[in-house]
Length: 140
Image: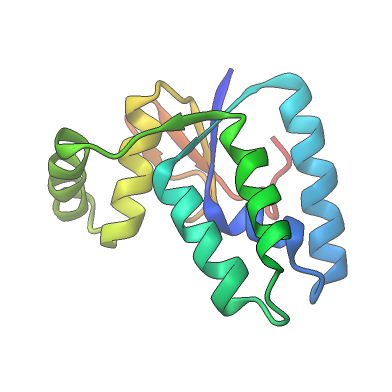
């Protein structure tokens, strides 16, 4: 199965301020990668870089940030392009989503994912064939 992983879950994996959450996400991601095809988007890479270098305290070093981005780039990366942006714009209005959430959902839909794992979009929300799952609520 193809699954999309939102930025916040990658951040938890690297954020040592919440050791229990970090340990859970590291184990969960390892198990998920062993069973499913993981997909991210250019937006996830951009947001991850921003969080790791600007919001995380202490910030990750340049090399650790590079290594994290390189690791994510090994998965399938959905590129941002004009049609994705235009469709996300329509989706944001139709589904009352924030702009950045709509971009994530649209990338997951376009890449044929059945599940979008995110802490931000609620649990069990659906966008046609795409199910949003919060791994902290359920371990599907």
